[in-house]
Image: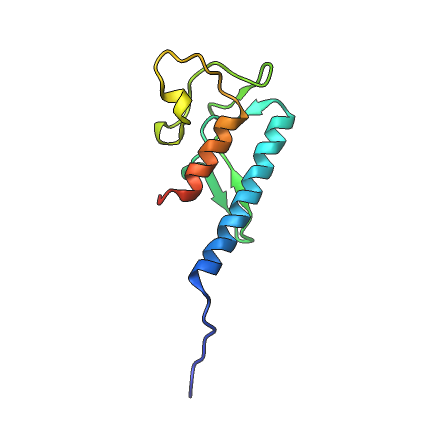
Length: 111
């Protein structure tokens, strides 16, 4: 009696997972942008996955409406904020770019 298993290249598998995750969440962020909403707290803890490996963005507790494509309040988890949001007194408004930055950091995060 022998048990055989197919060998799956871990890097190839990880690449597929990250591609699906990023496509799903970018789609969610694009939908929010169309509705003039920013999430403001994109991070691994706010990304869920179901049995079909579909990734969903959750926790809209600090999301907000965009006015002229930006918001001026400073929300989010420090680790995932873009550099311009970390400068004290910097009036750089928060927009969709900040959510995209946070997604990028989430994709390379080890959490």
